[in-house]
Length: 227
Length: 345
Image (cartoon, rainbow over all chains, first blue to last red; front, side):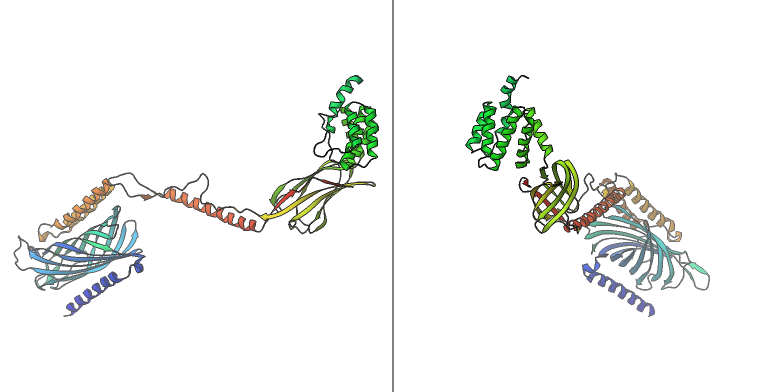
């Protein structure tokens, strides 16, 4: 019950941020950059063993706010995972994820990141719902006029799972790769993102620690309108 | 030279008697000139002296004495020639004899006459324009005897302002700054430059009318560029390189290798489908960016150069603005002589 309320609050805050960003008049945003747009997502999800292997597609929305040295990414996605051909399971599930990253430019191409992720599986017992705080770094490079790519990585701290279990200090991590290409004189961006998460989760039912890892790879392609 | 030769040459040398502008109306004087032209010096002398007893204009009187001077010179009566020329100079202090057309005897007598009387000749005031306090009016005159010479400005709102006092002989050059004793520029108007020479009981004065006008001092235009210096482009296009392609490969490689390395072995083979798709897009973008013309990069040297140039122009314009402010408070003085020098005694 508490977890459901937490999910609702997170979604509410995220939607509020997105709506506020989208309705702000452009002259108020003269000192900042905002981009907002939909994406098509496709992913690969594995849990516990290679038998629990899912692949799925879905939709996502990504918003980015940049102000001086600070920037923030908000990502909402929903994928419908279906058992892959090599899996032994038959049930599919939906994975709804919220990913919020706050970023501060440090030097050169380097920025520091801090945020959280929250992924919820529906039906609840088909896969693990998970929440964690992210901390890491991001390297960005301007490939050419209007073409930017970025590589990010970091750790996932304080992981919580709906089915219980825990991860070590370095047991959960994420990796990301992204590109954005300006179009229509910078009013529109074509975006592509890749995100990899691995949780070296362990459960203990009284007979000792049992590995129950979770791993997800998601690719997203879409566009964003910039303000 | 024999006397007969002198008699032949003399009339041509004495031709400067023929003066332009005014003409001689007096019949006696005309008869005297006719006799002189015919080398009849005795008749010229008699008629010339007779004309002086008649009513003559100043011009005619000067011509009569001049004729006597030439006649006496021709008759080798130098002292009398000098006396006659002295009368000429007293009547017409500016009178000059053309050395190319006058006999040496007459010229010599004329020069001796000049040294024996006190006159101020050839008073000239330069036509000049200058900024008040930064220039001066040139005044020149010649005084024929050593004397105390006082130069004054009269007229307008000035009641005789002395601008120079000196003991002089010969040519004198003065520079008058056209300022009042208070330092202010002399007000616009018509004035007279009066030069008064005094020696003993003798004195002579000459004057020159001038017109003094006030005007505004020209201001300087502001600069938009410095001559010989042009702005340089602040961006420059770097040469093409494979760096975008290389970095795209590195970033993609790191992401895919990281995915592969960080995957949990218990979960079977790693899925590189998602990372590969996005990575392929990045590699393609990197390849296109490698082929494209690189984006202009800021040229730091040129930016600093332009900044220095802008600062120089701004500094110069500040100086010009200050100079213009000062010039707007100044007066341009224009001094123009109105007519030829007048004479007084």
